[in-house]
Image (cartoon, rainbow, N blue to C red; front, side):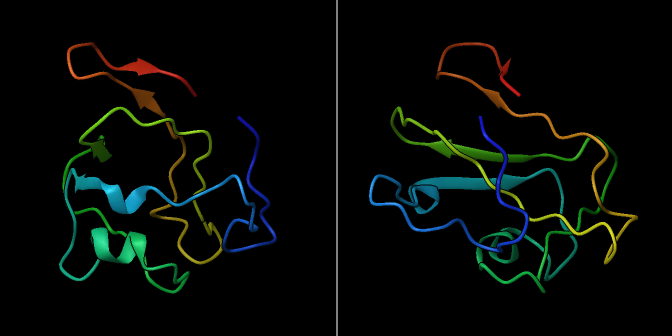
Length: 104
């Protein structure tokens, strides 16, 4: 997995790359009103997810069929909101019958 370019707010165009997030069901461990899934997905760096509950916080992205995911990009801004910037990010995968496996 390569790192995202931190100088850009959206991944650069690539003819082999396509957005598949709209094919998934997104759920959150918790969210404050007005700071949920819609704000994660709106491509606006001025909006954001804000959790509202006990840790750990998580974003669950579930696809209805097996999908190849080759890249995940997240925009984090410690200067803007250090209290909500994660100290650790764990990426795990699972098939419909298996246990979660950490991949990154």
